[in-house]
Length: 368
Image: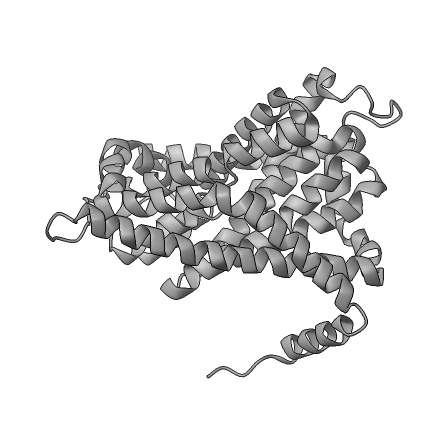
């Protein structure tokens, strides 16, 4: 049994001491988290959890993989089975993609290395949340929601390219590695998928409550404002004013809460800030994903690197798009705020140059 580190023990003790004078704030945060989970997250995720489980157990993911196998191998050096988690991750939301990848790893259709690489870019926000909540709900514009979703997809695919290494010369795409066995019974698959989806939803609800509680405690103690300076590089990247830093920090803890706060404080940089948080996911999403992957022993190191890169690429692409189409800025935004931040331009050009170099290098190695 591993001994807890001194830092972990110190943090646990500090949290315990903070809860004593802030018990009411913690209870309020937990109640808010429960409302978010039961009112938004669970109804949106449960159907996709059930469907993803059915797709894995009935072989639908394998069929999709055979169809997209050449494309997945050419772009990402992954077997066709990886197409299922990628598609479900881009349509179902966090953490459907990760859950599907773990299911394929458990069945032997993905190796450990393939599953961990796939986790770097298959775990994403779904269109229902981006278009419905961020676009129509928070921005009052379905068009902005569609834009954010398209940028989110492009950033995820670019992240996959940046994290993928080309196979050695002469290596052929792997054949289908599904386990042999009788055709699964649909009723048994459905029962297993529903039970598994219920367990996953329970874990997700607990983590949303936890991080909503932490946000309330930090806000009540004043630490949220003090620590928000840590997000200064992110606000500079997106061109957001200093008033948006507490919302960014909140989003790094719990994505939905931060997104709700952004329209009130981010000015013209609201879309880049939203793209950033949607790509990063935040600590709550990371822990939700960890609850899915922990039982399979998969490392989240590549997923963390992938989400950082995904958020940065999404923010930069949104800033560059907004500079080319300034009409997207809200009419009510202060005119003194710049549409484009010069550091963001430099970061965008540098980031796109790196991605271009990586992709060009892969093509060269493939043709040698």
